[in-house]
Image (cartoon, rainbow, N blue to C red; front, side):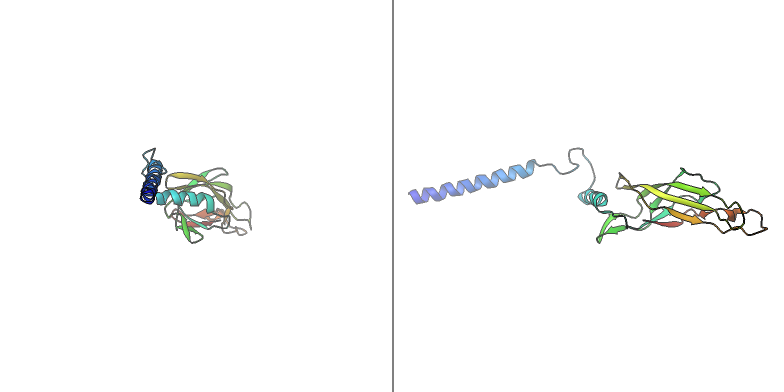
Length: 171
């Protein structure tokens, strides 16, 4: 009877361990569950990967939402756009196509004299991934207009220009 009783106690102890483990797992909260968030686990993981994995050599192709013209903009002016292609890091998507970006003008000038050209330099400051805003810092993209020629009056080509829906590459 001592052997039979020992097996029965081991079986009961095993059930208690399984029950305790199930209770602990069921009490744990999933990310966003407490706030009633509709963010999926995939979106949360993508946002976490975006913050952790985007490196300085990552290419960001941005489609502009309005014209950029050095004759109309000044240093500090802001512009916006959308990511034109999914951004992958290590073979994983981290910033989806269509994500909203904000940028600013760091330099704007029109051609002043023969041989000079209009210049426009812009950088990106932030990207919105699934409703979460991330500060970013990119290398400036500099656009250059056509150099003025001797004896030619100033025309709209004395500025640097990128059209609405044009696509710029940032790093």
